[in-house]
Length: 220
Length: 220
Image (tube, rainbow over all chains, first blue to last red; front, side):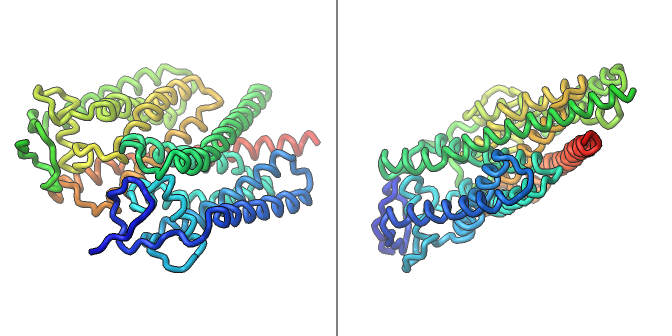
């Protein structure tokens, strides 16, 4: 079988019938950037009409809408499209993963750890993130525990993602540029933001139990 | 390099300097069983001396002590002992993993997904489980959210564990006996129990917020 040349590292990775990225990097990134901006703006504007919704909750709704759609659409496509790198048309979702694989070739190589984490993220955390938008908007009692659960899942997934790469030699990026821009920077948000959210939810939940405890002490 | 014969599947797995299991299966299992029984009995007896501690909380303390010590000692040894299968003495912890690898050879093969999940379990969930024993005993306000966090971590880890095996062909057991006894049955507790605990914690946390909401409504 004749091997197609591909831009990924390690160079000996076999990707029969590989079709190179067709869209320019600027297009791929700006479509994601602009769509995300549209989603965030829409959620920000619509959430402004809700009565008594704090700014922090509106910001969280924007985050959950953005991360939920990223999980469901982008990561959902990846999880269930083992042959995305063979895509002959400039289909946007395939282009995203062909491009991202320059930062982490395990995506093109269909590494089982990556597919597991992306599958769980797409199927469980994606819809749960969208549910979080609704839960915050309607002030459900499960709002904090839901946000905590998703954030913890994101953190666990990211931990498995980075630790497996480290254990396997951390040699999956086509260049230091792609390593830092895609592998490190693009994932950093999913370390920092879920950490902040889970700490906040932890505190809110503890406070709810403390309030309950005080109430019980008073009624004794 | 001459390959030592090993009992694991796939048969072409390379394990240079492999030393066969030295202790009988009955010894390996009964040491784990009896130690666990001692831990659970001790926690049950000691927790009986705590004032106003419900039976369900005492059972949970037994579980967290058992699972915490399993994570820290057994899984902690595995995570940081890449050469356990070369162990020449009948060192118990090495024997456990030589034996368990008959149900899942990815342990002996040092699969990156397995090592990542076991490492996270040993380093984060293990000590956190022992903290949960203390949190329940002292009725800390973070007791439920801590138990929820650990259970979710256990469920995520088990999900990655089973999904990666499935994606890689599910052919890591030496025989159907080892597949069902070790791979399926031994892991089932870490699916069933964390599921029950996380549902319980979710409900308790929602109830705390509902109580808080009612209080706020009343004081309005």
